[in-house]
Length: 453
Image 1: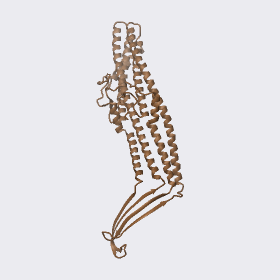
Image 2 (image 1 turned 30 degrees about the vertical axis):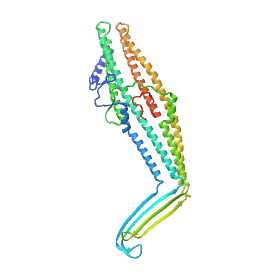
Image 3 (image 1 turned 180 degrees about the vertical axis):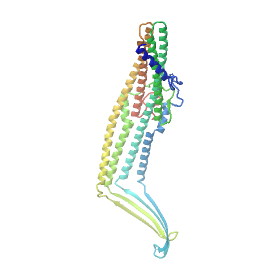
């Protein structure tokens, strides 16, 4: 036995032992959209729409963005309340072991009852309240835009994980078909060996290729199982989550041109909208800070009574009009103004950077969609050509006009063409998902799990 023949035999033995282990290619199979795939009873089957709903309800990052929006809304409520009067009610009762002179100076008493009702109303504060109210409203708008951006980013990540799981499931089908072809090829070669038209080396090579195919199928199943865990992580769910059995990577038609998508993104893209809202909020903060240089005027009043006995008899009221003009506060106002203006400049720079990034990302995503669609047409043609080439090579091998290496090369070409088609479909789906996240709306004519409004 030669060294090469010995190596081939050892490889066959090792591969067979590995595949006989639990979880190998002989695992129980389930039915998918393209036939049997593999069993995973612990995985929960969900559609893409359902997966998006679950993620929007559970995603931690989205919860944080929602909390920031709630805080901004409460700040707006506080700014609105600054226009209303302030009311305070004070009351008290005291008792002592020694007597004291009551407020009227007529008797000695040990007890005292007091009640005070006071209020104040700011009449003018240099328009600070109006500017703070506007600033708070713009901050709510900024946080709402940030929440919308986070929401579409969550949808994009869910789609990526979902399509990845679907693609891995389809790759399992490809590897399963490869095993079937290699098994048929081995049987065919054995018949050729018996007929004297092939050698023992051809049979050993076919056995090695069959075991390689089985190992590839095992790895594909492991990748599919891992992708289900990643999908569950994107959804914030425990355990594996599997795509629905009828989910495929079949692309939908993009309903808009490149220029249309660019205009929609620049007009209402979540990232740019959030950046613009931050600029407006920063500008309003600068205007509110300028109000600290103006005078303020407030009205204060109160009603009170105090008496050693109950019910009271000594009552009093007060009313005052007070104002103030800040002259110097150790440059604190100047520092606040500098910080507010610096934040505004930073917001402007971030807005410019966001627009440039948006233009670049939209153009790149649209190019990815176009390239993927063109690549799909070529990949489909390559699959048909590779399948036909395999049939021709098989017949030529039967006639002794091709070697076993030619036959195995034809098998590999078909598998690579099928994998390339899956990859192109995945790229198309992800390109559309990226565009929808950048634009903030659905863009396909009929999209499975189209972005929610």
